[in-house]
Image (tube, rainbow, N blue to C red; front, side, top):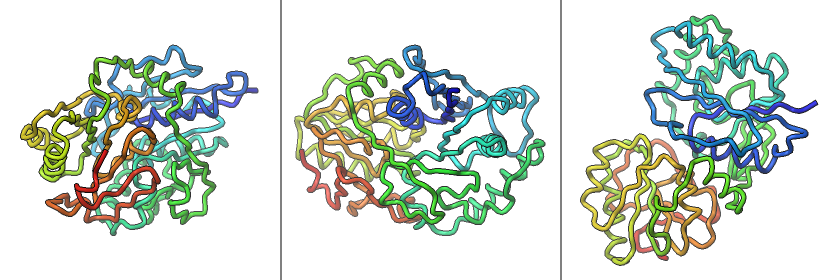
Length: 353
């Protein structure tokens, strides 16, 4: 009997990790039956691309509805959720612990003997222990549990708010999947499986097909400066200062800014001060762009999209650069660099081809 595997996806990054895991672990259709459930909302641009799964050994479905903790689910939304709850899986893989719909699903599946795996999402696994106490996180966790109860679903742990700032805090989790297990502080002593991501030809080809890549999206690929912005709730002036200095050092190099889907208009307006810069607004994951580069500089404040190495390029985090660094969010926790191929630059002068 085949094992039925589910990936519950919220973002393009989640989808990328799911695709890699499908190829490396679950591609044998004689042993596994894989389904992707892609959760979308009208309030977010996430997963709104025209995706192509036709060539993959998996099923997929979209779970579309908006979520508001101040209102109850509509009957149609409950019907969609019930369709998911009636599915049977031997393994359920998810990425976000703070999503109430996910909590309803994993609580339901856990009671039926499904193995629950938490997959990495962002830097949280590596910085959670350094985050300060957050009253808003506690309040939101309590509100989520109350909302779940009001909608008629059971709450598995009314005291989950106590450890909600930590990674892997939900009691239903059986295993963690991480790209850098050695860097994670395993405070719950959970089993950890490594996510070993590489840009293999097969993986890149799958990404191109799924996200309908066209070569015209990235015209220049050699000796470019490829920067990925992030929603850090700043005005962008720090990033512009770094990029302006790199322009002076490498005037012949094209600068690409890969725009995060929820970047503010204020930050986008700040980028207009730069010369010879192209802003890429595509929702295709940055990892696919990076796979196409050679002899280039790849940098960000601390984006996890740089966790896959392209050995022909140089990778830099700039969160430790002090000059004009006005990103207040970086004061709330200690950012670490868990990778070996990404250099943590402390000055712009360190960033070189």
